[in-house]
Amino acid sequence: MARTTEAIVIGGSAGALEALDGMLPALPSRFSVPVVLVLHISPAKPSLLADVLGRKSALPVKEPNDKEPVASGAIYVAPPNYHLLFERSRTFSLSVDELVHFSRPSIDVAFESAADAYGAGLVGVLLSGANEDGARGLARVKAVGGRTFVQAPETASSPEMPEAALRLGAVDRVLSLAEIGPFLASLDDGPSPEGEGVG
Image (cartoon, rainbow, N blue to C red; front, side, top):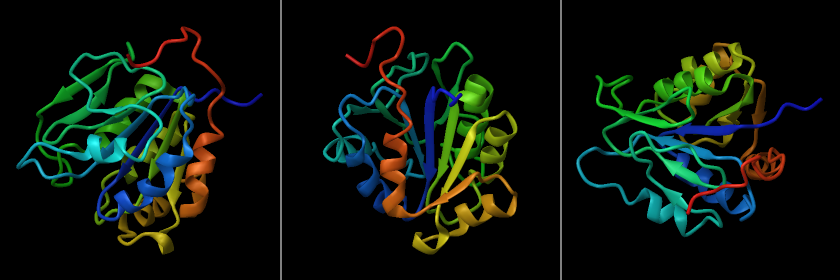
């Protein structure tokens, strides 16, 4: 029996926006799995990332608030200068703990807490990026039974992130840029049991 996908967490840094440009339009407006994007962005000014990505997406795109429930049918973008974590109650938590891999938000922090919250129901995806953030977290996702994927390094403008995950043996499958969007769209098992989304 196929595993139910309860959440998708996607991490990336340099070059990841190019990948997202092709991925997000592939997700239909009825896509019910929450998608969380954790990208290295400058903490020096408010982020326009949710607005920019929202223009490419049929789904609502927003930054989550602390203690906000993770809702179906939405794309969330980690806010700048906060680590984004997942509680076992399926709510978000924002933290100003120290930088990890020189970054806040850290992809490792998000993957590891999401793995604890969702277990085998989690899908982790690591895109283009210029350091090793996310590799250890993706290994944690795999260790708890979640599914793990990386962008093919040869298609990444900064291949260090996916390459680091591959070196750790943390990857179930390598996906080309053209494959990622349709593959994510195929992970939707239908409307959530509570039938609720973001208002």
